[in-house]
Length: 497
Image (cartoon, rainbow, N blue to C red):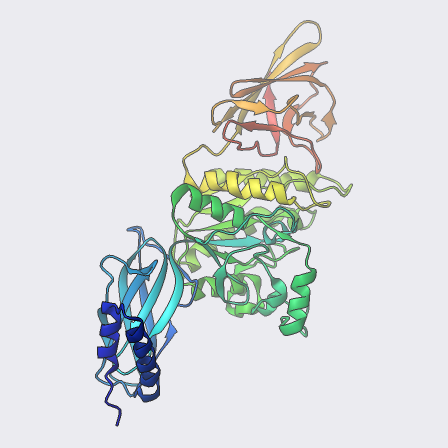
C-alpha cells in the first residue's frame, strides 16, 4: 500500500522549498508518487495547446471541459489558470467538478481576454494535466480562392506574433506563421489533389514543406496588426482553396462536410467553438466569365446569408477584397461587372465592406505579391475591421462642365474619403466610356481637388458617356486617401451634362 498522499506533496511544493537538498528530495518523492498514484485524469475536449477562444461581447470566454477519469470516483477535479508562472486573478485553484463515473465534465467560466494562459487540472491521486499557450480573443475565418489562400513569394513575409495562433488545415492549433494554408496536409478531402490522393504525411509532407516557395497571404499581416493596435489576441481559421468558383462554394453542399468547400469551412468553425468574430473573403476571379458572372451577385449574397445562418450570427461581419488585376489578354467586360457587383453589395447588405487590390504589384499574372498582401491585410482590412476610419473613396456622381472651345471638365465626387484624395506622382486610372462600352481616349489631365477628382477632357463627350476607374483587367491606378484606403474599380457612372 502506498502511504504517500499526492495532494499533500503538491501543497508542499507550492509553498516553495529553498534548500537544494529538499528540492532533490521532492524530486524523488514526485517520481515515487508517479509509481503509486491510484487514478488517472485526462482532458479530451474543450481545450488544447495553442487554442484561441472567441470572447463574448463582455470580453470573456467559458471553457467547457471534459475527459475521462479512472479510479477517481468521488474525487474533485480542480482547475486554475496561470500566466507567466503566476495564477490569473480570480482563477487560482478552484473546484471544477466532482467525478461520478468514468467521464467528467466541467466549465471554467469568465476567462478574460488575453493570454497566453496555462490551464492546470488536478485531482487527488492523479497526475497534473497541463494545457499550454491558450488565448482568449477574436477568431477570423479566411476563405475564398488563391489570393486568400496566399500565393505570394515566401520572401520578406510577415513575422509571427505569439498572440496570433492558427487552426491549421490538419486540425491542430499552433503559432501562426507563413504559409497559413497547407492544402497538402488538410483533413478535409475537398482540398486533396484528387479523391484517390489523401493528405501528405511523414517524409512526403516534410519534403513538400522544404521545397515550397510560395504561400504568403494577407491573413497573418491582418492578425498581427489587429493585435498591435488592440492588444486582443487573434485566432485564424484558414479555409481558402485556389481556383474555386462560387458554385464550388455552394452552401447547399454543407451536408457533405469535409468533401465540400462550404461544408469543410462550417465543420472547422464548429471545431473551434462555433462562433467567430468575422469572415475575410477574397474570391471572384473564377466567376468573371460569360457563364458565371450573371449569377455572381445572387450566389455571393446567398453565401453571406448562409454563413450567418449556419454560424448563428445574423450580422456577422463579412469583409472582402475586390478582384484586382489579371494580365492575360482576354476580354474585361465580365471582370469589371464582378468588380461593380462587389462594390454594390456594400449598400444592400449589412455589416459588409469591400477593399480594393487594383493598385498592387503582382507576383504572376493574377496573384498579388507579398508586399501588397501585407498592406492589403495589415492596413486596409484592419482599418475596415476596426471601424475607426471610413471605408475609402466611393464614387457618388460625375458631371460635365463646358470649357473653351471643345474642352471641358468632368468633376467626379466621392464619399467615404479619409481626409483628402492623394496620389504618388501623376493621378491616374480614369477613363471615359461611350454608350457602347468602349473607352474613348480624351482625358489629358487629372487633378485632385480635396475629395473630388477633376478630369480635363478634350473633345465633345460621346453619347451615353460614363466615367470609369480601373477600367479593364490590367489598369494602372494610384489614387488613395490619407488613410491609405484605395479607390475600388468602378464603371458605368453616368456623366450628367
